[in-house]
Image 1 (spheres, rainbow, N blue to C red):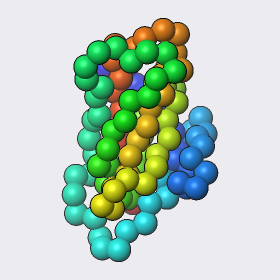
Image 2 (cartoon, rainbow, N blue to C red):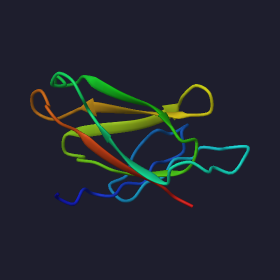
Image 3 (cartoon, rainbow, N blue to C red):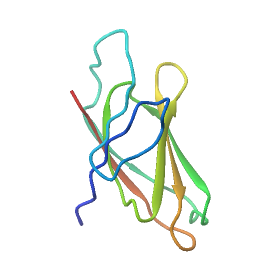
Image 4 (cartoon, rainbow, N blue to C red):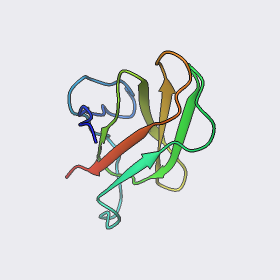
Length: 107
């Protein structure tokens, strides 16, 4: 599998991205004891150019994401019930049949 670039998520109020590592600015009331990493994958029909694909129920902690920045633009927004939602937008040329996002909890 090719190595994906690392990014740094800026605080949720900014929702912008840098070409280096990124982390979310989520807050939480109790220590997080869930999964420390995972992989998100688009399913279903190809995603048209400029369309969005939404991943819900991500942990409410600082996260690091790895994905193809040439094809996808991403923003992390608050979700319901103390979760976060990752929104990927297809900024590539034409429809995309596949997207993978690897995430890791950042201490």
